[in-house]
Length: 230
Image (cartoon, rainbow, N blue to C red; front, side):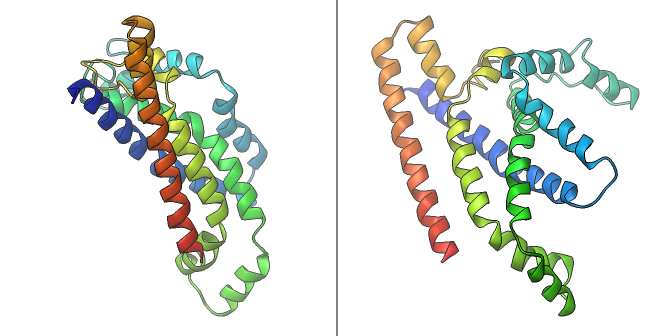
């Protein structure tokens, strides 16, 4: 019955919906692009993977500078294009979007490497047979690449969903849960209750609910993907 807790749940699911599906799509696109023989492929792989090995707090601070309303490089380019500045981190309209974009950037390289491994395990004979039959690129992706990537996709989906529920560092570094609680997600809410308000029992109850939600969603994911795989 706590309105603040309900808002936290909504924020958490908005964050997950914003980062997991879109992040996986971006990572798969990068993996398919870098699987091709292009000039400097190794360099591009290193560039895209470098955010993964960067400290999450450090990355969050860098993005705070980039998204600063007055002197951030993002608003500088918007002004150069004749557009208005955007209050990225100080408006409840844009704060969650800012965190979502940063998280997708941070995790894209990790998911990309996993998708690359999955793509490299698909035999070329399937593609050769499809091309002989006159299949289009979309048909090849829909009927060969996507179904055979299902184990990799499922693994990334489960791991990213669990990690998204555990999101804390970028919220702590970028927004502190604000403005007006618009970016307060589950783990940051637990942190606030336990270590700022010293409501340890309340925080423990929230942590149990978090565990139950993650277990339930993972169970549903297993069932859905298993049925689709069959």
